[in-house]
Length: 385
Figure 1 (cartoon, one colour):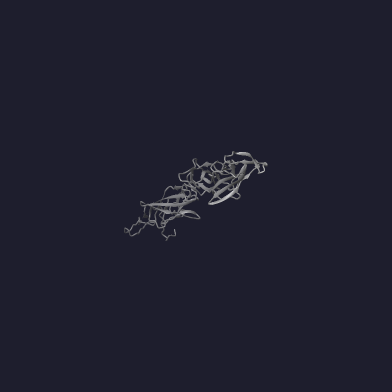
Figure 2: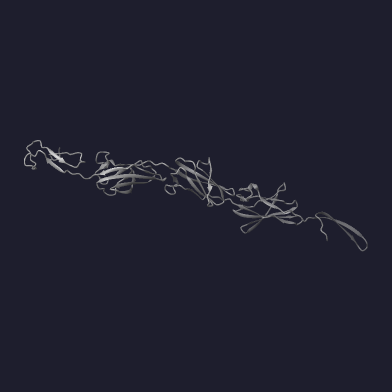
């Protein structure tokens, strides 16, 4: 046909005449169809698990809806490209005339590019614009850290009533929430300038005690995951006390005087969670610090070397697992290991002076001693009385 024939149904009439002049006619109905709509493909909204329209899904067999498919479509297929490989899926049509396609098997995480191909009864062929979707079924919480862990590193104890947490997650996480009451209430962490790092400091005072922090992370694909961290808040520490061991308090009880050169001191009110107990000793203007020791009877301190006579001022410092510190009042003790009898005199020496002879049957004696002597006893029968 030399001229274009329009779209639609046509009837061809053929007339034949032979040499004898006979004529006959016959008709043929035919259709000219040069048109085919361009198909479309979208991710089914029920499987668009992230932000609507972002083409992210955590469904590993997502369904896609095909649109603009003409009624005379004969073949409708979807080409899927992933990781350098191609797969062709055959679309299906439901009872209401809607076309869709779902992968036969599960898809691994990654990007998938889909293109629809339609061929109609007339042999026309059309392709859709390509659609790239991302399958993301994985999410993790890599690290939860108690930032103000100021006791033993890594023991998750703090003496700060406003605990601060740092959460490290993959870069596609868009929300991090925290709870310390078993999920009854949640707070949202703030994303830092570093991708994947989220921070939160509790604004209200948290009472002393043991807690379980629950962290919930959600990524762009709608995946969620939770992870917990046990931590302890301890803001209190008892005030320690140091006393001279009663066994070494050789003078009047409680006078803190001793004739022992290596006296033992008892340390009291030391909390069970103490990790370091030290004793500072000042003598003669010099201060030295020693580690105390703990045995079945509790905490004690004994000098490693002998002390010279004189005054010693001691104080105790305690640090617990949470980093709290406490200091005792100072204790001054006196070491006194020396004593002398300076002079013994027979007062009623009645003969030659200083010959210690007397005609008095009641001899009178005078004893001179240092001023700290508090008892002087005498015997004339070898110590029997």
